[in-house]
Length: 370
Image 1 (cartoon, rainbow, N blue to C red):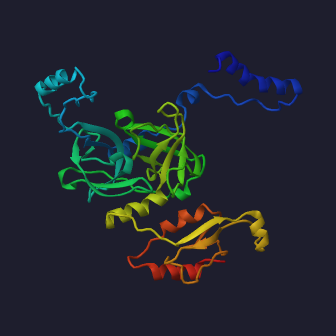
Image 2 (tube, helix red, strand yellow; image 1 turned 30 degrees about the vertical axis):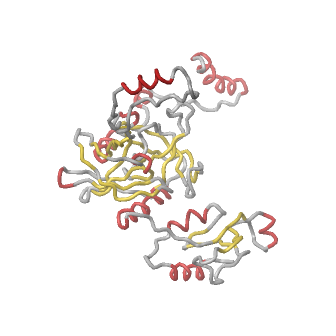
Image 3 (cartoon, helix red, strand yellow; image 1 turned 180 degrees about the vertical axis):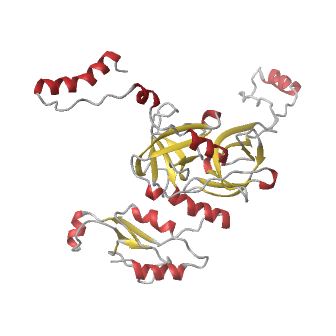
């Protein structure tokens, strides 16, 4: 930590330097005592309005048991004088049956449909759980039914009986409209401390952290800790633009680097989990590689962009000659493919009908450029 004296000297030094150089031409801005005391605009009203829709998720699962608690008989050399002793000892030892142990975990979630009782959280929060309970800020709780999970995006959708209590929900917003530097607010259950509110900014977008094939995270410096997983990241309009999922930390606590699943990805996954209990993603059936500057120049492209097809999977949607090795995909589903990382993000988001192969191929022929 920098000593206070150094901080004060640092603040004063630029002004002093300007005076010495004759460069100070206007009166420096001095904050009033009231302005210094008030700080940034309060988010108290926003937090109060949203807190009722954020829930704590508690789970329990059996870790085994029921097996005999008897210590196994040690293996001794044949004819050992200790053999008789151990035989008598273990023969007299009573059987001990161990009760199954219950492992518990805590996470966060939020209600997106009060009438239907739909709750969204992370898959890793409820993975392997025998029992899932949704806990509300007023102390109430409801058992939850698991509607579906998607391990590739780490999302899960739960359902509670909405007839048993009045629920409050929150809407999804458009994460694509968020800019680096925009204010965001996280509400969750860090370390079991329910209803915790933290505020920060969008630090970066489109982060890849190696968690799966669809990495496209919002990075934020709003404090996210263990137990925040599955909780919402709000914009200042009170819309969910991210689902808090992971942190980078050498200590297990927040160091200002947290990651949220963007709502643009989550919305379609959640809709499919609600409707089908599983995700149904678009699939091209191609292997792709980066378009380097050298490849772009050899193909006469103005700049390096898109994804080059290095192979077509036999029996896949485009194994009809509509796309061939050497083609460069620069657009899909009306969205530009800027680089090789973009295509795996765009294709799964395409909403597909149940019998979608022919439609997908039709879209490919119309909208892909080679």
